[in-house]
Every structure is written in structure tokens, then in C-alpha cells.
Image 1: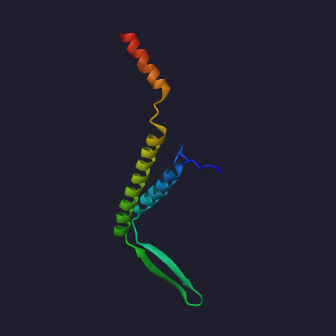
Image 2: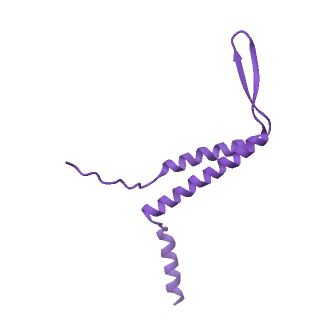
Image 3: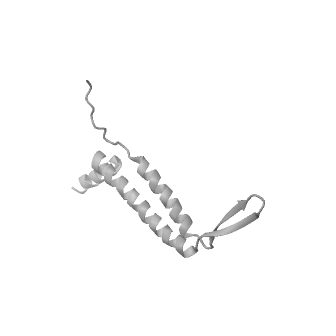
Length: 104
């Protein structure tokens, strides 16, 4: 029998994609100025319009979407730090070390 080992996520990019979709929805809802309408076409009767969302309600949903997007981005960085550690760029560390040596 083979033993199953747990797989550690190396890059949880899916959370960033979900956060990006919520951020897109938040931007669209926050910049909504008019009433959001839906056109309903029936066979033989013509067209009718139905109000779906007022601008005030769209702004509330936009704030909620923005909060969810921020939580998704925060979760990405928490998972990234937890499993992969926080990595600083090497060139910054070398420059700081070089400056410290020159001061001595």
C-alpha cells in the first residue's frame, strides 16, 4: 500500500483570483450612479423593464464586496507566510550589509 502524504500549498493563487473577482464587483458597484435595470423580453408582448438595484443598495454591496476582497488578499499573505516563510529580496539585504560594513 502507498501512504498518502499531505500536500503543502506552495502558492495559493486561487485565493488571489477570487479576491480579484470580488474587487472587480466592488469597483463596479461603488461607481454605479443610476438604477440597475434588467430588460425582460417576452414573446409577442414586447419588452418590460424591472428595477434590480438602486444606487444606494449597489454602494452597500460594493462595500461588502470590497471587505471580502480584502479578506481574501489578507488570507493569501497569511498562507504564503505560514507555509513558505517571508522572503526578502536578496539585493536589499546585500545593500544593507554593504552599508553597515562601510560605516564601520
